[in-house]
Image 1 (cartoon, helix red, strand yellow):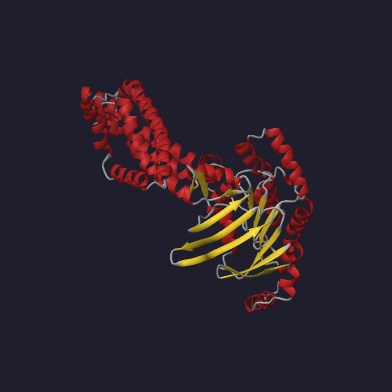
Image 2: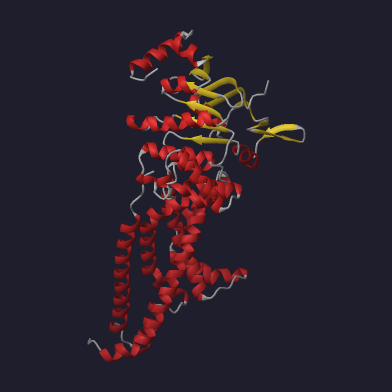
Length: 220
Length: 261
């Protein structure tokens, strides 16, 4: 088995196409997870027991089943009830919901860490519950949890090859297809590993920066 | 004879098996300065928290400025107040907390302008102008752009007072506002409150362990023990000639602990 640089240059454009999709799916998945997780975390705190229990059960259910199974359901089973999604959209929704349930736990910790006195001050200054969330609680809760959220999004990035199972033409899928048609695996798979490693390392540097910037919580 | 601005009628407050307030009734007249004293756990802070709607009551009625606080009329009957009613009633009341509870992510000026802009629709420029007047009054105008974390406890508390005043409440509640302060910072906060008492006709309820201040500040002093008013009267009579034995014991203890009377 020999390393073939000519082959590398030949497949590089295809792999970069795949990498673009991988990054796109990660960014969109992270956005969905960030928003969906916040909604889950707030609904979980609802005084309405039906809402909070339902949301809690849903989150446990999603966390307790494999992402791959969820992706199959979204892409292959939902069309049976008339919901047809493109592979990328199905993948982004799957990643977003799955990691949203983890993000919700991070949010919950961050929200619980805001002292009760802040809720009381918001009420004493007659803010509505909604205004208290937007102007008082979330601006204090979110910055300290940005590093933990970013950590999950890096983990999510490394899970994106699962999207190849629902025909998303991301990096892993492109690598598999060039490998299968040329019967050479070493170059495409190595390149996939290198791409993931490089982006993960860059992300970790970014994460350190975020930790320094946000992990410090101001005192009252 | 004006009618009371606060009418507390036979209220009960329990936490599980613990009864904090046991059929308490009291009236407060408009403009009155009231000091609530008593041992910790006697229910005095709970009253302020109930008036601010931070706690609910288990029984009884409260009337603020002629309107029910926890009830509202509906189809000729009184029913439990909804959030909209509570929101309307909270406009009449402001509160200053023992631990300040400033918004740490906002500068001093924004701490004060946030609520007037959000709840009363005051324009930013007008809200800031009013905030600067209030900061001037509490001696904090030069710190308008500081963050709360950069302030001393006394400075934070003066800002918290300005924040409550910015909503122009008819009733101000002060919950042990100097208890969390270093001793040398107590006086600057008390001075602000003295000025406030002298210059405004707001009704003020004060829970405090500063007996000397309660003596000078209050028109009337209520001594609480075990969720009931044991004794009430003019500051001179409560502090100099307490009739009830429990009041005498409490005052002796608190003097022994180094508080001035």
